[in-house]
Amino acid sequence: MGRQTRRIWVTGAAILLLLASLQSCGGQKADRPLTILVSVEANTLDPHFATSTIEWSILMNVFDSLVSRKDDMTLGPGLAERWGVDESKRLWTFHLRKGVKFHNDEPFDARSVKYTFERMQDQSLRPRTTIPRRIFLKEVEVVDDHTVRIHTRRRVATLPIWLVNAFILPPKYYSATPAKEVLAKPVGTGPYRLVKWVKDDHIRMEANAAWWGGKPKIETAVWRPVPETSARIAELETGGADLITNVSPDQMHSPAGREKKIQLKGIHGGRRVYVGVRTDQGVLGDRRVRQAMNHAVNFDLIASTVLVGHGSRMASVVNPPNNDPSLKPYPYDPEKAKALLAEAGLKDTDGDGILEANGQPLRLKLDVPIGRYLKGEEIAAAVASNLRAVGIHVEVNLLEWSVFLSRRSKKILSPLYLHGFSSAFDAELDLGALRPSLFANLTAWKHPEFIAEYQKLRQSFDPEELRRISFRLQRLVIEEAPWIFLWHQYDFFGLSARIGWLPRPDERIYLPSIAMRDAQN
Figure 1: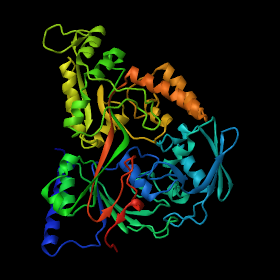
Figure 2 (figure 1 turned 90 degrees about the vertical axis):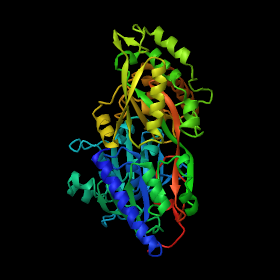
Figure 3 (figure 1 turned 45 degrees about the horizontal axis):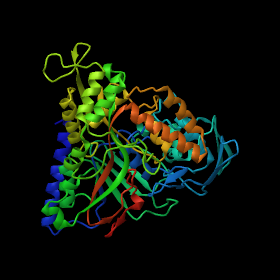
Figure 4 (figure 1 turned 30 degrees about the vertical axis):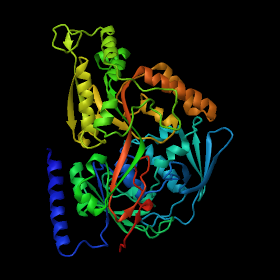
């Protein structure tokens, strides 16, 4: 157990003791903050450096973007009331809301939009955001205080989708404040102000009474990272939390939970969970080896045991309704796996059950982030066992999420790694998870046909052409197998009796969507 994990355990234990004392004195106060327990900590709250779902969840409550993604995953107005594209498909015009202010009272206007996109491209900051590249940004033109034009170098049909994460910044604050300071002190126009962040302990937000969308009903919200699922559930059952993430239905049936009437809410999410295969690592560059690894995995057994009957194996990297329905997932077929491995020249020469490649035993590490994905450690253990059964010795290497992210950014993850990509519920963007240039894609898979066809996909505005290209690419990805395909993760949340909420398929927690069932200050 790492130092950070031990500290969180101690914090959790202290809170449970405090709750017990409150209950003995007649129960908890009804005006306590909404408390959300998440499985991992945010690393930054600077929108131009954010890369994880927990960061996006927090940011969407502090900031607004020109385009919003609603709870049903459709796009709608945000800080832009309306927009359109001209005949060339390279000039987009956005008409902005009037009378909006940032939390520090700076006015929101067209110059705020221009500054935000310029900061995204400021190489002296070395930002992590890929939005300018993804929309082939040429320039942002200020037409007047409440009108901007975004010029692109080529046609980009998905531009409005990309703008969902383009949170607008106040120019004076972000230009005058050091980058190391703003990463922990974000200022936006959103429904909540961030008032305190104690790293590895909690984030506290308070409602923005002047929000253009109306004052939020929840006055105060606290987010806390608690990696251990059992600890999150214990706090929900004892009243120390109102909403917890990353739980499994088999863990939510204790007597305490039934007595408190805690709720389990699940949704078929868009996150594609897979084992990434680093195709630049020896025999993993052979498609037959990758296909064999897929046939070796008994996902039906994983679903029935580890996932207690939830979910089915991924057949496409694209989420419904944009997936090719004719595609079928890899069937569990260990004999075919062994035949493919033999065809690739791998043999068990000394009879120890481990195949050899170039005279060396095929021993691989599988990096797995702790607490990040639903039953991630258990799924990884099952996959490793399946691969060992066909002669590929796999050692599961558990990593704290922050360590995993660091190794991912340095591109030093092991030849196999458990990972999950969230979804924008768009075929092009779902397929974009396999772009060679994507920093989070460590597969090193560079297929000429994929690269050429994907460029066509990015520029098409024709729905039928999009469908044809997308279906071809989905089939190519399955055949080439740069991933060991696992599942479209179900997302389960635990809720206290104090709140009503329906989860979103994109895993994000948007506070204005949560209804409180008792009073708050």
